[in-house]
Image 1 (cartoon, one colour):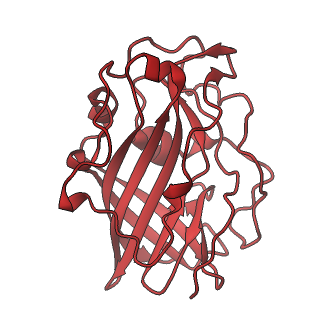
Image 2 (cartoon, rainbow, N blue to C red; image 1 turned 180 degrees about the vertical axis):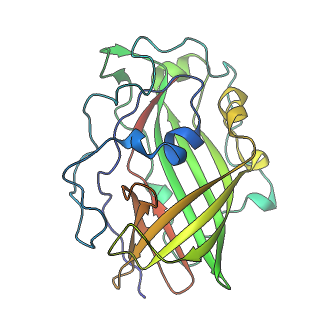
Length: 251
């Protein structure tokens, strides 16, 4: 299949997270963190609504709605750039690196409080290469520090997980052609976020995805539990990737 660029589709809500939040509970394990969107289709193959990510009120119950805990992230500047390790290479297998489009968003003022707060623009990126019935690759959490975090000594950073997915048949998404039962293992050596953020990510966890691979070389990714769409991407004969829309993370 040929490769073609696609616009990001607004599928993610804006979150308010406490300093103890982690990738497993906020992105993978707690699919309800995205909230219900009555305008989203549940994977029937129709195009999703396009536009700016939801700037509505953050989901209730995700975290304290007051001012974020002060000093939760390390106040030292995180390591700059991707760790210089051959194991940390980011192959893309002929697909466009969708993370090149990531960058800061409007994440300086908490909408719930109207107050400037320490936080970051958050994106997720995943790359999967097919290998004899399995898919292997990596997923990344990209954080772009807002002004308040930079003033506190923080900075842009990335966390990475190595992934292995076993192929199976979709059970939730009617339009999807493949499902992946994935094991994600945190790769500390290829992550450069402050320890206060990365320490909760140690170890491995499981998640199930269902994926719609279209003939135009695009992909749509859904959670296997809820059927909620969380990202879009590209595909070719040997690999597929995804990139999420931006959301705000508060520390």
